Length: 182
Image (cartoon, rainbow, N blue to C red; front, side, top):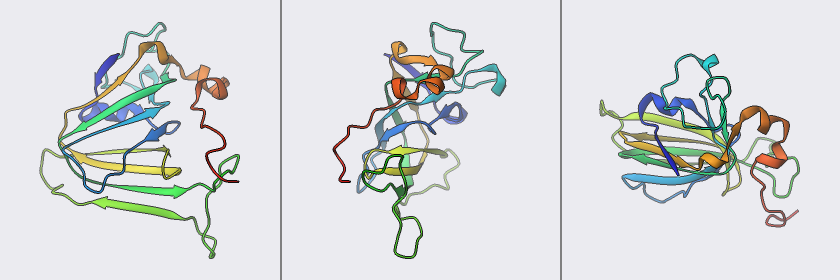
């Protein structure tokens, strides 16, 4: 397993937009949060300018190509003092995914907040957006923390983003069918 520091500005070099996130939505936040995600992109290509995250030793030139992690990664956020989550629920069994609607026609959105002392000068905001495993939907998670933060993943799961884009069914997360009613 490869472990990278993603504290501070390094977190901005992670892209969760194609990720499938397994976040344990606890009643209260602990000082350290661990969760998994499939399909995180590491923005390592030179096109983005200087990257803050350390480039992992992949088998291709990651200064020319961003890295898609076609497998599970473990994210650890330390020094957590608060945060929130917002989930726009997907309609069960819809393919492609469509959002659940209220009687009035607006999206059904769940949200939860963990209040904390976020005014401390050493606290940073860590925000990520992707697809949440449960409840199933499009989510934005914001955590306020001082770190340290890390990501662990297998180098063997790293491919060029272009490979994922041309073959998403091969490299993206395959949600088990039959788990949601139609």
